[in-house]
Length: 285
Length: 294
Image (cartoon, rainbow over all chains, first blue to last red; front, side, top):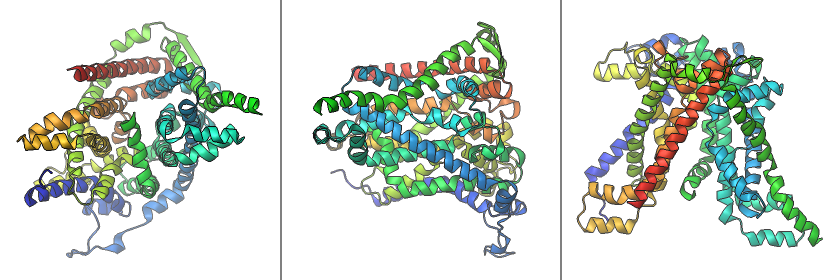
């Protein structure tokens, strides 16, 4: 057994880790505090505004004005709802179709299987920016500009997800179990929903989260495909806010906090599944 | 009955793959062909197109803005990945110490910035880098007496982008390295220790070879991501920045296609980006193959 390092070295390691923790968290804390500050206090105080002469926090100077402005004059409630709608629908469809595709490639022998595997890998490596202009043109020709359908359709069956689900199902779903269910007269759709999906439940959770986050944070597609302001998700709305209110730091902080907080909370609730799902592809693949 | 269920077993995989296959055909294969045609056209919005042949390609190689974008993107990708990899690996190795307490919490904290989308990181750092009120200048001023007016967003666009991307991605890559470190052979490590190999020798000869496969994959993924950087500078500088210091390839593609309305030129830029990325992947494969033979 390699010796436990000396106390001094252990202390040093903890100090370095503490330093990185501070660097990671301070920007977020600063943003959160800033969301409750007036613009004048942004100039006067780095974090909380303090009472005169003392070290105590002057709670009375904190304000909800920034949030009031965002919700009542700038329609941020609507943008939050849009982001939630887009991210939920996209992630549910993407997870369902990715799991279906992954299942077919992992557990069936059929003509064209090798070809489809190649197609999936090919689809993964196509860089998204290359498709930006032609997909915009196609969405325009399909008359789907400025609709959520135009945003959801191209994103609803991600090749990356098919690959992840295939890897997850190859060994964890026993083929004998599927055969037994078939002999019992269970239909293929029911086998998938009631036997296969429950076995890969952690992967389902992880992929739901990955696609929810990805859609929530996606900027370029909604920016390019949506035109009317009342349809914007938060990512596009925040870019407009940054453009028009670039010196209203309190407002920008509050808008960013509103945009980050929901996904942070969701992640904290489900983080175990998320991390294991995220790294499983790398380790096994 | 058995005949019927046999039939359904044969049909099922095609049905399961149908959603992916249709999306792939409609939103990837067709646009991919279309992008080749577009690259030979000049368009004014999606309605008006004009065939120009190889004029786009000739133009792009003499386009000073494209060169600026290319140079900025290369510098950003190289610098951010070169700084990120050792930092991520170092963090992972610190977290991998068996005696460490609170590993679970630290891992969570370091990873959390990756959840924040590039758009939001861009907005957030645009006020962090602000001159008199921004977090960074105020902290540097109070600790080291640096100038409060240090013009991050105006003069030091590239360092600003790199700092923001480090904050965002270091913890994310740390996760992959942490997974990779589980491949290190503990017995080999102990044997090396018994033979008197120092920490640096053990790192070079035991740790590094064990994490090389995943390490190469992480480097490639980071480079591919860095070459497609767009939202971060677009939000940091509210556009390409002073003197186009924050202009990147994808930002120039976006400007050409959607602010000027030339989808043809945007597709030309897209193909150059794709070729760069393919070359990178090929290079990485070559390098990792050579390593495993040696």
